[in-house]
Length: 338
Image 1 (cartoon, rainbow, N blue to C red):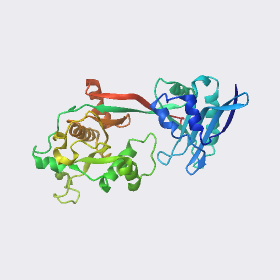
Image 2: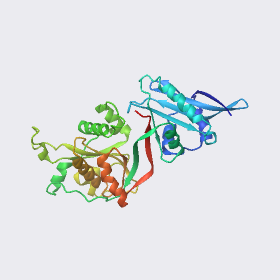
Image 3: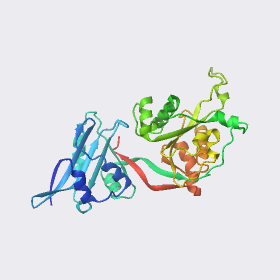
Image 4: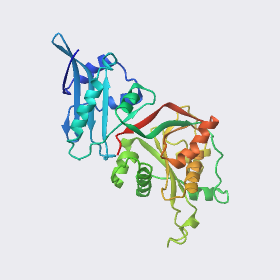
């Protein structure tokens, strides 16, 4: 076997697809999309390994390392080798080449990270290369009516309306809380500075797929002591942003969770979070109440990182009781040590 290495060229994706076949994991499918010609804006280096047989070069492996505007403290890296060329040192050689390129990244960042599925060859390769897990993520589907509906204030419709509200995804108030929450639950891999415009682009505008948002507010009485009139709305304590299908019943106002919207068997993808300044019990209550509302009649799908403490404390008992289940396999984010 004579192996030659070169930069990625247009058409390599089709040639490699013939050799590789379909992606072995969800993560592999995602990272294959990052294989593209090297460049400096954004900075990316992509290398192809060719097996040269009788003067004919056939691409059999590829690797990429690139900077990221979101989570800039590490570089994303990916290596894939054809099944019949594994355990021959190609992966290790490509990773060494990526590390050499990373040492010259204009940002000065050289630590690598990747996503793998536990128990796969990719996970074993990452472990052997010294990359250790820094986070676990799961896609969790929550079945309808997993929790008892909350009672707000005196139980009246007006009390519920004061605390549960449809909010435009363009809201600056919503963008502020979403950005600070995302930053708070990603202390393990800082997202960097998130402006309101960046939060809008990533999570809330049409291109992100955002469809609608429901927020949970503290009672109006919480406004006292802050120089705010009692008629003002309470602080935003929790949010649920839906994507694609939208939150079931979101146009129905405060009793959206108990509304008469038509049932669907497909779960709606939802980003569920809370005001990061809340105490642990308050944060758990806010997440619990919103989940009870949005999943009252319709299944929802949540991305659950272990760092999302309040959400994990609500969802894990549902997993244990069979009212929720993990869809697909877990994802581990693995990284070079600090």
